[in-house]
Image (cartoon, rainbow, N blue to C red; front, side):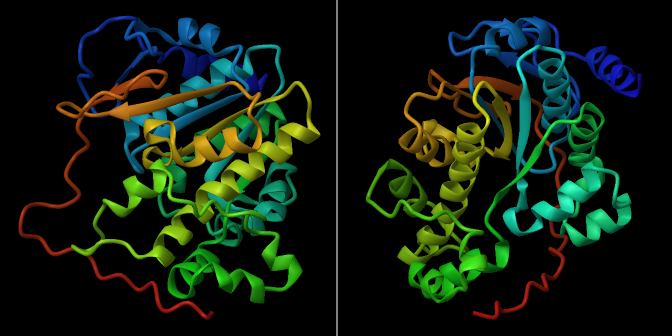
Amino acid sequence: MRVLMLLTLLLLGGCQAEASPPATPFDYQLHDPAGAPLNLSQAAKQLASADVIMVGELHGHQGIHRFQADLLARLLAQPRPLALAMEQFSRDRQPVLDAYLEGKLGEDAFIEQARAWPGYRSDYRPLVELARHAGIDVLAANAPRHIVRCIGREGPGYLDRLPASHRAWVAERLTLTDDGYKARFMASRHHGQPPTEFQFAAQTSWDDTMAESIAHYLQAHPGYRVMLTVGRFHIGDGLGTAQRLQQRAPRLRLALLYPVTPGEAEPAPPLWRLRVAEPPAARPTGEPAPALAAGEPEC
């Protein structure tokens, strides 16, 4: 009954098949790869044949997070079994996530022990609660952040020094070749500086780990499908996580849903376009950014 109530509440807030721009930061409009606007019912029907549905996001954008929850509710109503995979949790936290899903851990302890992202309650709680009440698996798909930082500092050779239990938290194989994803990443700027080879190795460790996590799950669960929540850079142009998953499992049918704000270039097919409003500014002009206390990794 609780599952049905949650599904009903979310489905009432679905998008409409209209081409008008989103009116508020909580609204969205989905278009298929051909550019046709779809409501949630139409979208779910078209996505029914996909093995993996990757929903890109701008972290903290409430319209996108609302869409992710609305779409998950629709997919849960379909007969094909489903699992939720999340960039926002790392493999080493899977036992904590499982304990919460099984009712063995309270939410406060879960958030602390799983090292949930700061916006968990506003951004990702609806997804996890839908999954928990529906009794589906949630994959902590990503590589641990502290290991990724060490790769960026010391290079992929750092992985060879890890004990086997920790090494298993990162994909067995990293894609370090000069492909389109590397070219796009190396063309970006970090604090005004071009990235290094080590930084790209750190970046692709996220993509390869998420791709491997999904590939392994689907191999162990024939007939299932997976919905992944992931930052949009990781699926842009069909590269990153999507490309690395396709390399591992060429027969999987992927659907990539890419969000765009007003004035941004639209993704080319076969990506889907998720139109959302411009997010509110994080702080007024001239206000200094808060100090970060990330610390140096112990490598």
